[in-house]
Amino acid sequence: MINFLMRRGLVVGTAAFLALGIAGAVAQQAQQQVAAVTGEAEISIQSFQFVPAILTVAPGTAVTWINRDEEPHNVVSPDRVFRSKAIDGGEKFTTVFDKPGTYNYICAVHPHMRGTVVVK
Amino acid sequence: MDDTQKPDNAGTSRRGLLKCMAWAGTGIVWTVAGGVPRGLGLGEAFAAPMDGFTFVQISDSHIGFNKEANPDTNATLQAAIDRITKLQKQPTMVLHTGDVTHLSKPEEFDTAAQILKSVKQDIHYVPGEHDVIGDDGKQFFERFAPKLKTGGWYSFDQGGVHFVGMVNVLTFETAKAGGFGAEQLEWLEKDLKGRSASTPIVIFTHVPMWPIYPQWGWATEDAPQALSYLKRFGSVTVLNGHIHQVVQKVEGNVSYQTAFSTAFPQPAAGQGPAPGPMKVPADKLRSVLGIREIVMAPPKGVALTDVTLA
Image 1 (cartoon, one colour):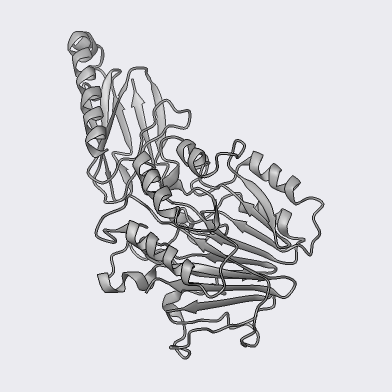
Image 2 (image 1 turned 30 degrees about the horizontal axis):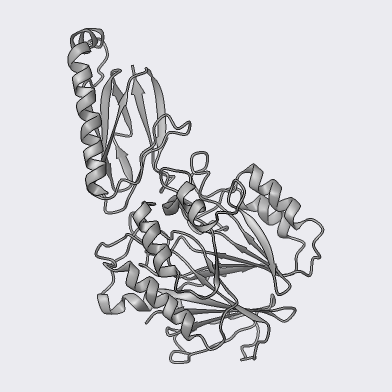
């Protein structure tokens, strides 16, 4: 299962990377005004917190959560725009944010853990 | 929290006794076997033979967890089942108050079901948050409660006692703690309506129904509404898991009882930066894991014994 999760993360990440390769130049130009991350971005899960708690990215960015705790976590947005399975310690989960918007999410195992991805 | 008793601040004057029974005003007897026995300190302590029927609560088996705090959660769940088999009076049923699995993985559900097959009694389950990761409990309910309607909550009668299994791990998105949600609360109100106030009630659920430590999610946000429906009943016992340690509180006619895990202990509320598996020396592990034996003898009362796996 660990392998499966990581492999899936890799596949999604690669697809996003290829897509960005095509639209990359245009996207980059459009995003120059905002200090948004493009391409790939990472959110660390450590000590029961999402770091950074608020991440701003450009549309099409592949965001990867890496769990650096021993405890399992997951990420789920209330409206199920994205939802991971359990991310155990050392595992990761990647999803691509195509549409602009503000995406709040929580860890469904530890509901006091909250984060936001802003896509613009 | 003044009348909350924790294992680590227990009196030691009765150390060595296997059974210590203290009747409280609500007719609750609480004992610990295999550890340091503690009474509630309310009323006169005496040992009374209990008739009535017995059932067992097990909790937080976290099948799939294999880190340092307990590399073999299969073995400790099996040890818990062996404890049940050895009970002098065989229980009529078993309640599992959630976190059967650690990561909601299909193979974890397979292993858990395989081990729990050796329990002779019917097992009534409610899910923990570890059982519903990523699928809102689909696998859990298919596996452990296939006949249930949407939502996963249910009730049944046994020996004159009304049992209510409630789900408080599926509303985490709106509450920073456990929650039942409006639909389930509405169902509970209807379920209790028309029942005599002298019917003993047992509520079993995963997350504590009183705010032990909301900062760590050790609370159920809309529990006060559920409790308002329970106020008129003379005897209400709330059994839960989630925090992997025995903590109790008696408030009016309601007795709140959190149970041992069969997998690993957790720190006491607020001790350390976060909840999670607590490492203890390997030879001490089974003394902080356990099962709970409950004797229901209406109208006399309820007797609880937390039995360690040591």
